[in-house]
Image 1 (cartoon, rainbow, N blue to C red):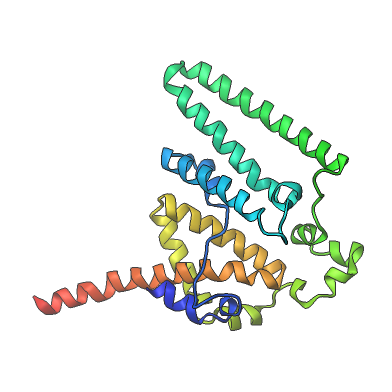
Image 2 (image 1 turned 90 degrees about the vertical axis):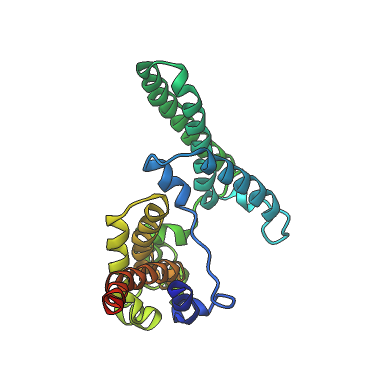
Length: 245
């Protein structure tokens, strides 16, 4: 409830939301795999979601074949492929020895990774997949757009975020969300691993480009909600129980 309240009134998100609703960013599945938190539920959910979402998005005339022909969408396809590899490894794990499993895992993952990189560059070179845009490079090198594509740097939304913008877009949640982040780090599970990595990565990208404050605000509101809930649980409820006694 706290998170819903914050997201409904945060200036950093209300400009592009409907009734304060929010969605998450697509790094959860990769984060769970890297943290070795794979499960059959994860496999079924993401495989179904990725296939259906990609096919349905391609039915929109404005989108067309962009989900399969632009470099910005290739990481999602890579995560989908990685999930299939991990699922196959989990299936084979109880059927072979540990040494055979490690050999198969390391060798197979290395071979598939090298092959994927070669195929990607071949598709880009052949013109089947569009290369990364200038805005993508600007996220990693803040001076790239000023040197190579000045028109991108001239847009106000592509400028680095100032501290004043952080305050006006996040208000009190800018000071509270580190408490929620600390609580998640202290009590890690599948959901909290996602929100931790989401928040840390979103802080960086929001600092590089002001328009990406939109991706940071949901994480800040969720963590602020966790912080207030944690504080109320530790401070208010024990106080009420003492009064009843």
